[in-house]
Image 1 (tube, rainbow, N blue to C red):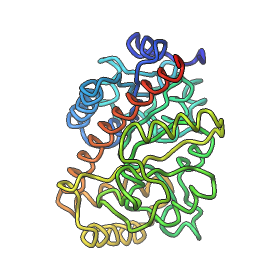
Image 2: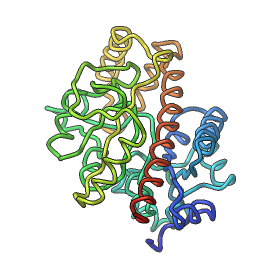
Image 3: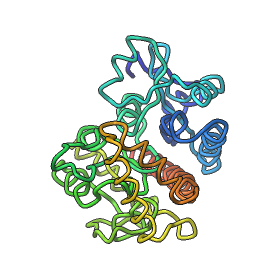
Length: 310
């Protein structure tokens, strides 16, 4: 265990005894939606993990430590404060050195979860290759983190504002397995399918957990993307969301928005252009991913225990 990792007693006990643990990111709380809706959302995700029989571990950085499992005070601070920065993997060391509070993205949550010994992480959608990346070179750090960090991430694919074909191609180049969870095609975040085929499908938590255990044995070191489509009742029509994305991208280009400001601008624009329906879908898919993540973490812990006693 890395000495810079600080866990709540509940999370530490679960990891030490082999109980299932699900990592959750803190950027969704600090930058995903306004207070108090963000706090309510975090509490719902934590409750879902517990209901499924696993231990939730929201991850953040603060007081010179990687915080794995936030107590009520830290959760309240991240939800209320406006000075909590969003940090990816490359900023972890700087924030540890400064003692400042930082909210973890997909990449940094993966890195910190691995340091803590957590195998499964549930989120909304991962970052990826941005539209127009052939000229901007704008590619999320999430993808390279998948290539080097053996954590399974349950998500509704990559955010729909991205170039999904290029994102899948990049993951393939980096040797990252993408498992379709009860789907043969890559989800499109707000919509159930992008139409892009996937080579591997898992239909049960045990099937997904078995793949993770085999990866452990192989020791290849890459993460796994478990692509879990948004529930049908919360999905948005593909044509409608694509039209809204194109409008949002055009707005961002016209205003000269670039770099790390692109994603938050586009997501906020989609909420406005869809009259809030994209935010409702985002919340629904995050809850669904958390539930599936807890089911897979539970299956992984059980199968690992059975293998050790066989």
